[in-house]
Image 1 (cartoon, rainbow, N blue to C red):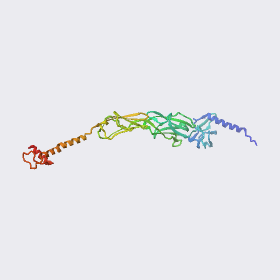
Image 2 (spheres, helix red, strand yellow):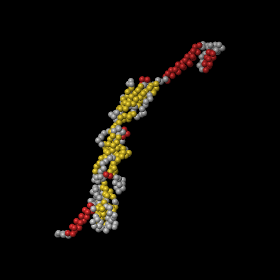
Image 3 (cartoon, helix red, strand yellow):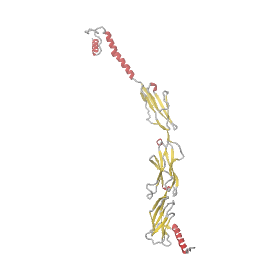
Image 4 (spheres, rainbow, N blue to C red):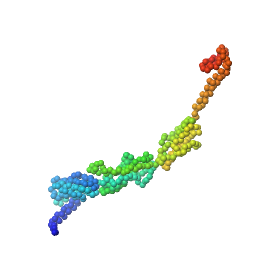
Length: 377
């Protein structure tokens, strides 16, 4: 059975299609009573459902209203049109709610701002045109690769040194709404303090108050930096001589910090008793021959640092004092004691006035007093 469709139906359908084309090209967004979307701005994740309502007008008398959309469905209830999407598959879409004004005056319409977003597939950090360890005092470029994110114009990338933000990365201005990949870069000056530091980057989609809170964030894994630098002496540099007493231990320390770890070479003019590849020179008992100027060179693949020590060994006077004390003891106490005994040997009678020596040697105060009295007489 054939169904006959009246001719006037085709005319109406064609007229509606024509009006749709007209409103796209002749849309007036500055009319007084224009349609109002709720919400006024829509942020939706790609693949998620969404919806918005349009209040077409409050006082218009138009019978021609509609919603132009690239995806989803809409239903009309009086002057309100509800737009629903079960699965947002469009990246660039902006529904238009409209009504026809008076004849030959076009249409009054409002565009709904829709932002369709997608978090990055991955975020990674590395260096541009560099691999392996860095060197102190050289400049390098960190790079953060962000893959398949939308809209990329809303993406903010921040580099971190440990927990300290270094600043946002630089990128080209990109207004593309479909997923795109981008490389963000940041220049740094390497120093020895950067050795072992963890670098990372964070990509954040800033979608405004209508977007998810907190904003979607994807971070890279940490990148551990290795910085090579020449040896640096840890202790203070001494310009005054190091004085040590003969017989005392002598210890010189030229420990340095460097990456790779340094090797050590000691020299003394003239050379003697120098340790092989050690940061410490130790002598158990210093002697006069150990005095002089020592040089310690710490070297690695980056450079060499030299530390000098001026050592003065002073004589130990304590043994001489001890010898002098013994001599005094002999001269003052022992020798006179034997002398007294020799002079007075064999005489045991009590002393008489005028006798040179008429007593037996007795140690103590009595002997000294008698001796003085005899000498004085």
